Amino acid sequence: MMHSEFIPKYLPKTVNSGSVVCQAPSNIALVKYWGKYGEQLPQNASVSFTLSECRTETTLYFEKTTEDSTFNFEVYLDGKRETGFEPKIRKFFERIYSYVPFLKMYQFKIETKNTFPHSSGIASSASGMGALSMCLVAIENKLGANYDTHFSNKKASFLARLGSGSAARSIEGPLVVWGEHPQLEGSSNLFGMKYPYTVHENFKDYQDSILLVDKGEKQVSSTVGHDLMNGNPYAEARFKTANGNLEKLISVFESGDISAFINIVESEALQLHGMMMASEPYFILMKPNTLEIINRIWQLRNDTGSKVCFTLDAGANVHVLYPISEKEVVQQFIETQLSPFCKNGEYIHDGCGLGATIVNS
Image 1 (cartoon, rainbow, N blue to C red):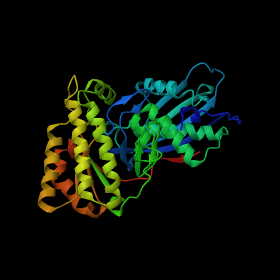
Image 2: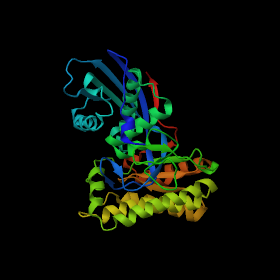
Image 3: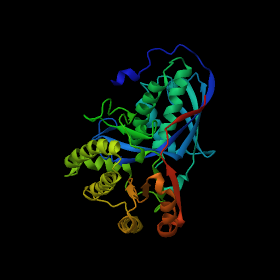
Image 4: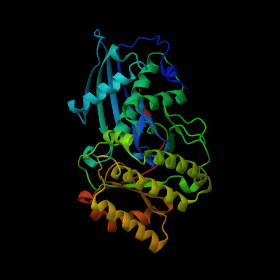
């Protein structure tokens, strides 16, 4: 699929005003995307679990305007005007304008809220851009585009990627691939797609408890971190390893081999942070409590044979992954053994979800 297929050929209807409400979830990558080129394109393919409870809900109000030479919008978070978010939205609108040509025809009010605390340290860019992109495609359908659900989701993923790379994976679920890979038919750098092959029952309803180790602003943003991969001496080997790990997961997902899954997922998490330490300038986003939690997870696995494991995003928080059959045991372990290493003892229990939805159109 080419970029041109996302440019609407004709929008026959006129709608003076209205609103749409959409939700999109966060996601947690199992094989990590770290390093990009061009316009938000990944250097390697990635695969993620779509989450269920950690979501962003966005209401997009639109009203026809006579001023069509600029982008006219305001952003509100939890009912409060957030001008600090507006430069990022403006940049997003600039990137997607050729694919969403009605953007300058309307004045927009963007009202957004998260089901998780905004200051929790959970990245909200994926869910936020996913929800906003779903809203924009819903408006396009109101204007007569008449896309089916499959194409609507594909275009929403394409647009979301231009706001935040990982947002490409927040439209579908529960397993989503983003990035072209020779062993995954239909995969693309332009959008995320639902994982297309067999998934064993062991990986159905997988659980993710997010341990909030640090809720402050990261000293190095993900955008800067991605850019630093351009000069990283280990970058090419990393991209090759990531694509190789994704290929290995194809057979793992089919066979249900959780031990092999653990080896790949934990290695991916540590490689991600290893790339940060090998960057110039180098940096570390893990905290001492991150390492303490990892060691205690390893100890539990060694002592009991549990299939619990961890992964990390580009920060200090720990995602504790486990099959639903171990839900009671692992959540008790988190409460008694791991919560003391979380900021204010805070954590969020979540699990795999089905992706973004239109709440009201």
